Length: 498
Image (cartoon, rainbow, N blue to C red; front, side, top):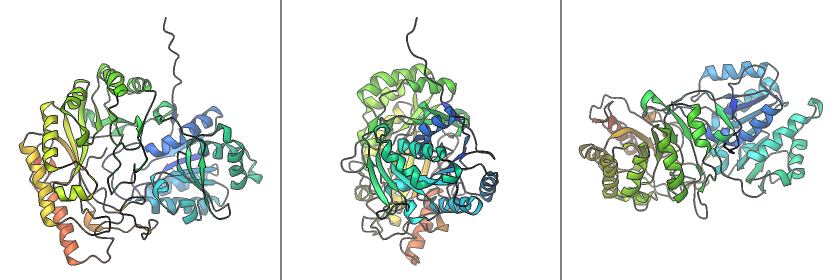
């Protein structure tokens, strides 16, 4: 008889509706995302809170509209006018920050000061000016490992009688609950005297996936797999490379951490029978334990799966090992066909020759490739590195990969955007008012934010010509349904995002 203890079933996060008390909102992207993923940052931060609410039968619900629309705001207003909302938790990226502000203002316009409005997510983690300081309608913003702090803050707020509810009293509970807390980060609120942002350090938290504690009952669209669906998951936190100038993840002294418990992955797959798994880790951790324990388990599940890799860290032996254990898709950022640009953006060791070699290994072992291309690269000082010649180098690289038989399942062309906390962020940009670049409306990234067209405003004629070159070029490298790269410029851009 097995002595293995049964795992508690994850709490299902339902869609929000009138009558919801705690509202979880994934701020909509102000464009058209081409990958319908799950809001992992929001669900990871709120998983323990969701468990707490379910145990106490306090209603909660998720709004995850993907892209912005008037219909989303109409639905949100309907829920707010029901009079039941007491807490609103918003997760936001920098590109969605204006949508976040609009959400917070709508909450105040309909509900006044009664609800607690909390913001977190990638923007809060990286931005110098925190949301609760920049946006008056937000009570508290949390950066870093916020799951325990969020749980304690909301728990205490909900326990206070309506007449006595206050952010101040809820925040006081954080100091009183320190022995039960975990995590490191920053809490920001204008309730405090300056400084509004104060660091917290309650010790490290164990890396775990929100899938262990909660799940969302909706399919995830991902066109590279059969049935165009997948179950996205992560088994690590951080990036093991962390040297790209355009990314705020990783950096000096920051190490990627891997989940200590991997048993739940089989349970997750059983709940989604036959659906492919997609590991969204920045770089799939190929640790000894993952290779010796997880890979055989994945093979035994009998479903396709994919992950993200950094080509310089790949060996042909690892590619073969991944393929033998059910991996059919690898996503990687090749970004440019120019060696000069690759060096300048921090892709140390990644060269055109290495890209051709290692993607050739994928072809040899029957693994399909998803390729990220990043046009409009800038130096750390903002100097534009991209030229018509380097664009042509990138396009020719894609065609050479096709000619060598690399099975390309998807190409994701984007435009380098300055994000807070990166090497490109010099502190002078207003990340609470994001400019638009209509030239890049076909791109998921680049139409919103600071890129080579919007950092310098208005853009000169040379930059506008380069933008047209980039847009035209991407239309010539679109994968067809059989994986071949189309040279028909009239085809739409195929953006497949992990």
